[in-house]
Every structure is written in structure tokens, then in C-alpha cells.
Image (cartoon, rainbow, N blue to C red):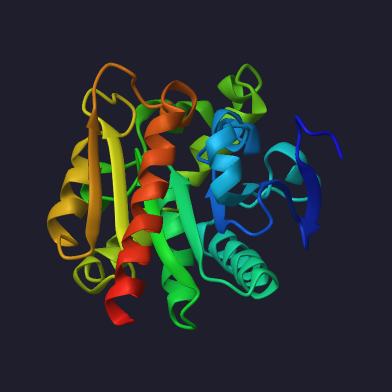
Amino acid sequence: MNLDLGERLQFGRLSFRKFGASDGVPVLLIHGAPGSWRDWESVVLDRDAQQKYHLYAVDRQGYGESAKGKFESRFEPQMIELCSLASHIANNEMSPIIVVGHSYGAPLAAYVAQHLAKSDQALGAVFLSGVLAAWKNHPRWYHRYSLKSLIRSLVPDRYIKASSEMFYVRPSLVKLLGEWERFPCPIALAHCQDDRLIPFENSEAINERAAERVVHFKKIEKIGHRLPHKSPQTVIDAIDSIASHATIQAASVD
């Protein structure tokens, strides 16, 4: 095993990397669009994080090491694949897990957490710079133009994929609107207030709608959208907040 690259594993069409302590709290990390497991590199290689968590960084279908085969732009099939992977991890670990999503990965993480919660396998969900508010996330002009045939050949493939995904996510965000108030597990949020790609209002809206479930809400300045790259400690702090909340809840029950 290459210590810098973790252990590479395969589940169906999905490739993922595993890092950290085998007896640590399991954490599934879902990247945005475009992206890959390497978006989480500063997080999964953090020494403190590796001592506390068993970190699983997945490449969504069509990206990174899951790029072979057909790219899936629709939201629901991706969600189903990730739910299956998350259940597989939780069953193997025999432990509930923390699900983390950045940007486009955030709504996927929300659905994965809901799925896991049905069998008490969700410890909590972390949403970072998330595409979460339906009224804030319409395909933009550059999404539309990047898919036009004359421009398509000039745009890197990963951006073509990211643009096509934005045309399918909104119905799933609308469905989530009525579910935030009864979200089945604790939530941690982090978002940069000057994020020009995914407006800060996305996280602010979820903080209001799911107020009783939010245990952590970090507002950041001057780092833009690439939160896992620019501030890995913010990511780790959000994960820590879910783990700490679970410890406190368990102690209160005992």
C-alpha cells in the first residue's frame, strides 16, 4: 500500500481510497463537480484526522478513478450508487458513519445520510459549500454554453461533465425542501461568505430550516469555494463536531 495514496478499493463502478485508523469513526467523503477523491487529500493525510477517523474518499462515477464506463449526469442513479457504497462501508465497519459532501456532493450526502438513518447507520452529515437551496441553483449561462457543440471541443471534459450535472439536480433539491425540518441525523455546515460559485445563502437557508438538527455552522471568509483545499482544518472541525455530538448523546443515554 502506498501511504501517500491510501488503499484503493472498488465497489461496483465506484473506486475509492481508504485512509486512517481501522478502529476510528468511519467517514465517507463525496466530492463536487468536477472533482475527485484528491479534493480531500489535505484532509485524509492530516495526522490527527487519521488517528480519529477511518476515511473513505470516493470518486463519483465519471470522475477520477471511477471514470471508466459511462458518465452518469443524472442525480438519482448517482445517489443510489453512493447509498449502496455507504451501506457497504457501514456494514463492514459495524458502525454508523459520518457522511461529508462538498458542493454538488452535499445534496448527495444528504440523501445518503437519510438512507443510512433508516437502519441507524448515520452518525451525522457534513455539508461544505453545498448545493442545497433549490431557488439558488439554476444552471448558469456557462453551463449551457459549455454544452454547445462548437464550444464543447474547447472545454476540458471534466467541466462538460460538471455542467451536464447541474441540469438534473434541481428536482432533488426541491424534494429536500420539505425534509430539512425532520432531517434524521445531526448536521454540520461550513461555507465561505464570499463564495461566488455556490452562494453562502445555500448553507444559511439549511441552517434556518434544519435549526434543531444543526450542531455546527462555520462561516468563513476570503477562501472562495474550494474549502477542502483551502481550509482542511475547517472540514476536520466540522467532522469533529458530529463525532463529539454523538459522544455526548451516547453518554446522556447511559
